[in-house]
Every structure is written in C-alpha cells, then in structure tokens.
Image 1: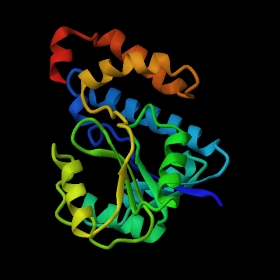
Image 2: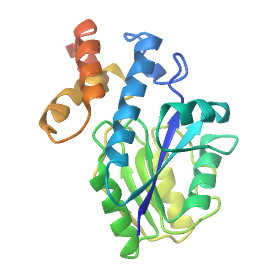
Image 3: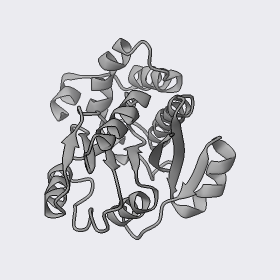
Image 4: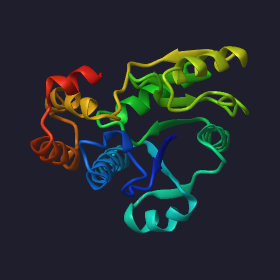
Length: 226
C-alpha cells in the first residue's frame, strides 16, 4: 500500500515566504529559494515508488496555479490558521506523514521511516526542525484538536505539540532532526550537509544556495545568529 505524504507549502510569492532571510536576501531571492527547495522536494518524493504524494497549498486561490506548475495532486489547505490547517489535513488524510516545504535534506526514506513507526504502533511521529518546531509529523488516525492552542512558528512549538500528544494519550515516537532554513545563518549551515548528501536530488537548491551565498557570503556574524 502506498504511503501517503502531504507536503505543506505556501505559494512562492516574494514578500510572502521566507521573510526571515531578508535581509540580506531580497524578497525575490527568498521566494526563489523557497521555490527551488519545494521543486526539488516534490521531484524527489514524486519519483519514489510507494509514496502517494499530495501538495497542500496556501492560499487556496493558488491551487489552480499550482496544478499548472507541479505535476502532483495539488489541494488547498483548509482552516483559519496554521494549527487548524494541520488538524484539517491530518484529520482528512490520516494515516499520513506531513512534511514542511523548507526541508532541503528530506528524502523519501524519512517518509518511509515515519510510516514504519506508525505501522509498528505509534500514534504520532515527529521530527524536530532544530528551531523549536517540527519538520515532519505523522498521525496514524485522526485526532481532532491535536494542534489546538499550539503556538506555531515559535521556539516552543515542538514541546507544546508533545504536550498536546500527552493530553490526548497518544503514543509518540521521535525521528532525527530535519533542519529547515529560516535565516541566512541557516543557509550557511546548509552548505556542508548538502555537499555531503551526494545522492540527494537537489539541483535547484544547490544552484540557488551557491548563487545566493556568492552575493551574500557567510560571515562570523551570520554564524552567531544560530
């Protein structure tokens, strides 16, 4: 049976995505980075046998544009805020693994491992993103309100989600961290692991990182941001 994977993404519009990269990046560069990572991620996961891939896009009016751009099943995210949209997506599609769109090192094996943990009895799987949130969440069955009152994009998002899991008496398992890219320092920190991941299909991400860092080099100050 195919393992369902939901990619949660915003449409790559300058000024609406990856705003913490600006400055030093321009809004246009930040949007191109977001698009490069998303394009590579969809290609990697879409090429993996055994994955039932869905792109859940925000805002809803971007869905038709997304269907013209990406050769995957594109659906709208539903809900007033991110917590509601996560609840709605996993409530509709569970059992499923949901991943963020800003994870340059994520590949199909992370999705398979998440599903394997669910199949072995976990109710919930989570992979931290290194910045206080999570980059991957898998749910074995719908759990309405799981993310209610969880502060999103906050330093305590991950811990608050674990607290909600305990409140719902869910058996949860943790996967290794999946670093995301929010700041210029995160971009600098990506260079070495991206170079080591020689088998990772990420041509757009590699080219974009190289070009952006040629214009905005890594410095000690950037390293101290982390």
